[in-house]
Image (cartoon, rainbow, N blue to C red; front, side, top):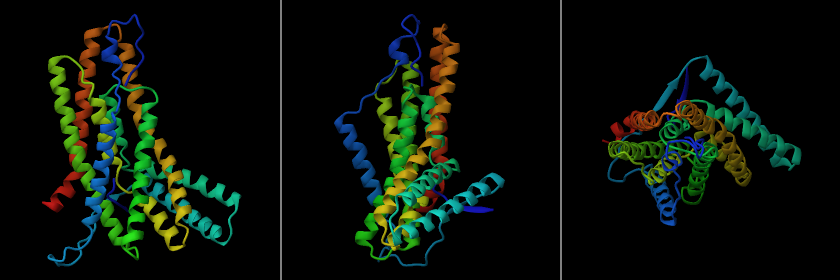
Length: 324
């Protein structure tokens, strides 16, 4: 048994089709205000989560054990072993680069980092379920699953970089327990926010299904949900950053984590494309039947948002129990 930390659609209609273009191609554009809201929300919850790891001077007591999820089975064990092997080889390369820079060693390091990121994101978690649910629930263009996959991966790795830099400048020596606690706090808040966002999306979907028209703001809400759920540190990235920090190689560690994030984006994007092409196939088969298309679209949207709400609540429940 392996213990891992709990960290864890269709522009095809042609002009002659009967279904309205507005219904099929629901575009969304983010205003400057929306961009600022996403950034401010993300930074706020990063700050809140990291502050909570420091001891309260008015509340003493023994340290509580960190919540973990047990993952067993040959597939999970095999992934964990391969990740450990890649991580060890990356550590050896980093130590070798400390002795002297080499373009060949850098190329090998970045290649292994990319592979490690893809393997790491292929395991449990990393928001693949969230991405699948969102692209099952909403219209999208062909490039969007890939873009969202990279968005989540960059936020996942980038928040780890931000957390390490925060500790480097304010906390002095790094304590692995504090970092792990901060990661769990941020993930818990992210899932709690996702519960609220998915509930809003579900209620909006029900309201618009009853009224019989679309909502141009749903894309903005979906994007914000993705941004908020991706803004917590990746444990794998933290381990790399801590190691490079102790070896005075933090700039190289940051680049390594960014390359690793690009690798993580592939499995996450794949989950989005599974929903995208699955939904596209269904509507291609039904494109001559307008009423069925509308009903199927509404059903898929309700199903996707319902599953997203259930999944986020299930993942946030241990955290909510701990703070209530």
